Image (cartoon, rainbow, N blue to C red; front, side):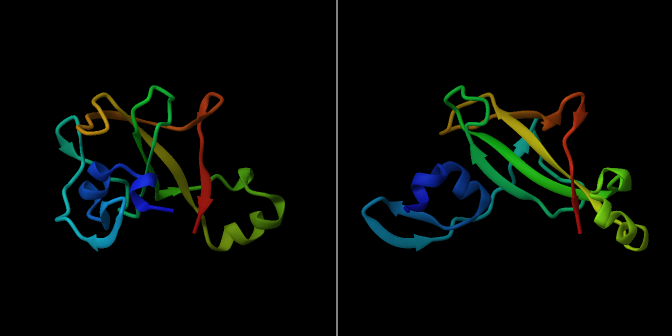
Length: 130
């Protein structure tokens, strides 16, 4: 699979990951990293262990930015499977969440504003992380 078929080059360049020069040439290069912004401020996650992914999340034809994160908030022990609840009393799990930055621009010139967390019913969706 060609890298350029997975992510648009604007995001590849912005994230500082290798991008293909064109679909017929497999030569790779690295672009200088660029801080992605939302509302004119660099995007910063809770601790810094970000996992970005670009996809048309809301089906509007423009790719959005999804960023997985985990932070310093403990995952609620009662929401863990019973087999993990006892272990969690000795070593807590952090709460992992997914930020959704909707693209209000275009794929070529993305414009991100505020993020929202992925929701599960009335609550933010979360998962235990270690």
